Image: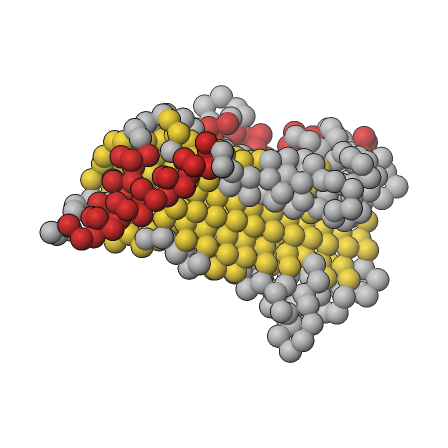
Length: 394
């Protein structure tokens, strides 16, 4: 057993021991307060005693953190210096009322088994961010890098994924499965899959579970790009995939994909398989400098009173062999080189700005509102929040 493994086991044991001691010895509820700790032992003691409040973590290594407690009041674990409080891994198993702020996590974060009301912000995480059977999850202003997946949301009810940087994973940058619902994904930079041959990565992938599909989810104002083909593998964009079979299969509903900037070299920038009429794809700008993506593809059976509504987008091609679409005005640029339309190849948001006087410039189509707001955020005197990625990484 390595030193890191022995240390992790030891710290987990200390946390459990302190919880047991304090439950036995406590004579009454402690008031929410702010405490400062500098060692794993001190953190374990503070967590065992706390009903809520803030625990400030000095710089140092804190091993493995495992929490299975529902706190009566919100408790915040905050690094005193940004990213200087380091954990090997964090597991919140049935925990609730927990805020993690400014931490560095070396080998992934798991939120599972009924965990709820969990917020993670301003943190740097290597490895997967994995959720299963969780509710009311907020993930904001974080960096996620280097795992097999970026963020996995399995059976999560109520989530907000905003202003994160997710990059350099080997499969999907984000995966949403089963009855996950009531989600908002905005202001994220999702970029650069490092997939191996034989895998089929996506930037955001939706998947069914036994015919139950995610619903009521908005994907808005994100920058997504994977323009480089590595080993004959590159990521697709937003992939709303097979809804499954059986009596529960009702297709995808209440999905909104709007004002996103997408550049992938794989065949599908936006893909929808089996949907109700409440799927909307609008005001997105799709670039395809490598020639593979830049398109919207629809396949499969349409449920309800029609297929997806597609309007206000800029894309190279619409592929709809089953004639599912309810089509509004869009700018389709197939046959016109991107170099005549866009300011760059699509790895930065500035690349999506139209060349002045071009067909794109005159059309008013695509993510024009988002691009205008991004331009305004670069001007002197702007004091609003960053519109893309973590605020601390600007």
